[in-house]
Each structure stands twice: as structure tokens, then as C-alpha cells.
Length: 88
Image 1 (cartoon, rainbow, N blue to C red):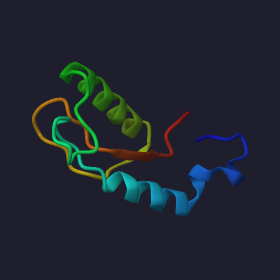
Image 2 (cartoon, rainbow, N blue to C red; image 1 turned 135 degrees about the vertical axis):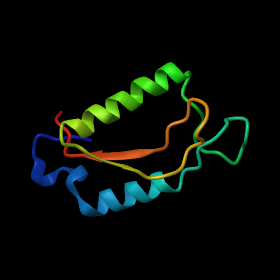
Image 3 (cartoon, helix red, strand yellow; image 1 turned 180 degrees about the vertical axis):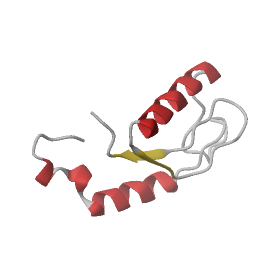
């Protein structure tokens, strides 16, 4: 969510950041066939790697990126992340 008036931007709100981060942290990542999971895998490892590169790029440009949940270490999974102060 971005607005031209940063003083009223909901994303700059500490309350929004806390609530959004808490919601992401509560997500369970794993195989889509398991009904207890909220998020499944990316379509492929190649796509996962592209997303991870974008996250690394945002960090390299000074963005703060925080991983908020756990994801399986094998497969095309990505844990939910929250980023801020990245260039738009």
C-alpha cells in the first residue's frame, strides 16, 4: 500500500506494521496437500530463487527485510517476509 502523502501512508504506521507482521508470522508454510498449512510452495525452485534474489536485492539497496515464519528447507518454499525502506 503506497500513497503519495507519506504522512498518512498506512504502511508507515507502527500499528499496521505490528499487525501485518503478526499476521505473517502466524502463517504456516508447507505442502499444499496438508490442510493445516496456509501457504504452499512456489510453482518451481527456479521461481523461488528469483524471489529470493529480489529479496536479496532489496536488502542490498538498504531495505530492511525480516523473515517472519518458518518454511521447509527443501522444495520451492519461501517463508513470509516483511520489508520496509526499499526504493520504490
